[in-house]
Image (tube, rainbow, N blue to C red):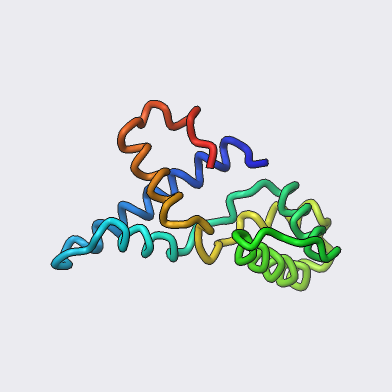
Length: 137
């Protein structure tokens, strides 16, 4: 459901966040890679990494009461909260405009587990030339 460009942007932003957190931790006596990945998992993300059509579908399902996966519940709740806020800020905006704005809003996190982050960050470090075709997270 994700466009390749959005996925690539997410991975690039995630790696940049990892590098920033890693560099900031250099002065610490010791920090394990799993602790570092847990910290990265809680860092804010520059945007929601989904396309506007999928955001619209998520919001539609939420309002219809369709069950949502528990692994994505935080992201869904944040999307709904941001959508409601944007509707108030831009009452005359078309839905298509609102959903485009919605996905470009800063997100509370990347909504990924430390294990998924590890796969994205460390697989890229091992195989940077495969990045554009092999990532499917």
